[in-house]
Image: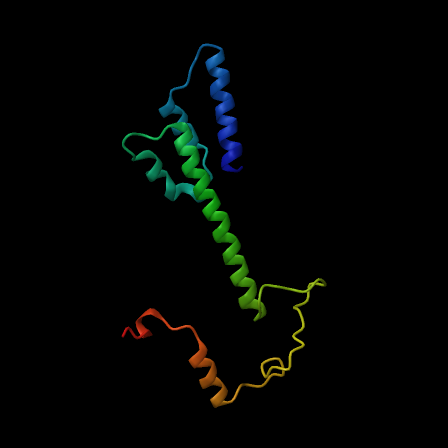
Length: 136
């Protein structure tokens, strides 16, 4: 269950209880949100519960949505890196699912390594790191 699904369900339940005369306090709503979290967010619980002033339901929801987004991005990045490492290539592929063909006559495409003068030329053209730049 996503954070959006969980918070929508909890908000609906809290609204229903309020409509029948049993309102749920903000701290109770945050506590119920923490109780309903997936175990993958257990490390995030202290940042929700140890805040002064305490989180409101909406601020806790916002913090968890950001954490969920970060987790999704990290998972995508990790999957891409795993795919590149296992296939030994780039994550892009052609329309048929195969890596795009390199029609250039480069040495790398032909399975050869560049000569030492060529490597030196490439090294000189690379962007300089901050500590390598000369300041006159």
